[in-house]
Length: 122
Image (cartoon, rainbow, N blue to C red; front, side, top):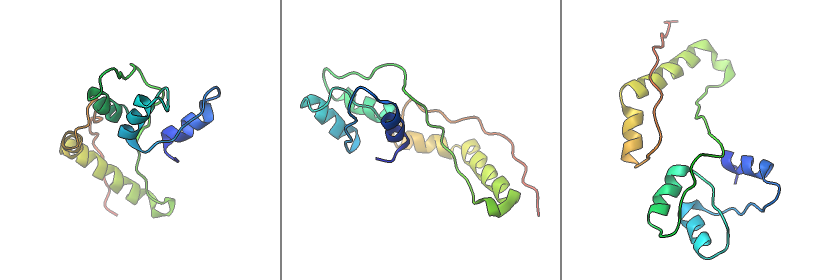
């Protein structure tokens, strides 16, 4: 409850009931037991669980995309924003983000190319 997926589905689903379950393993258990007819969530997690289940498939496509973001309080000024942007680009360029995805077994996700950010001394 409260995730971006949950908020989207709660607003958009008109002819079905949203049943909230904790995690992909529980969602697939509910499918097996006939408690629900469909499961929605993070593709990579559902695919990993579905690979272990005979007779379960993940449909192609997606019902939404969540673009991840970071931010700083507005009162911190442009220097803080530039520092955060520089940090994010450094983590992408240095391979930290790609390594984290691999380390956690996340498949199907990609890292946006790093951009050059100049941080002005101030």
